[in-house]
Image 1 (cartoon, rainbow, N blue to C red):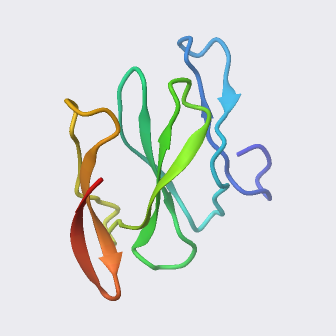
Image 2 (image 1 turned 180 degrees about the horizontal axis):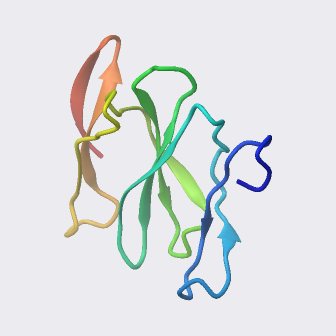
Length: 111
């Protein structure tokens, strides 16, 4: 948090913490959370919680610097225990298996 009264933002470093760059992700209020789902040398998978007790949020994938993020999946299910079923298919860059909340029930998605 840059200021306790302001929304939270994420910073990433690609040089073992020597320098940090602000990630281009939506900010999160104190009622929301960020979760790093998985990552490797070239890509991060991030979950940004929706406001309120919705049990879902939006998943983003990063560029190779971990700074520029693209929206990957809306209504990504993240249960009340802050757990998510997420599997990175490492043999296919940017492909994962997870679940999505869809009109009150969840479905598995291969993205």
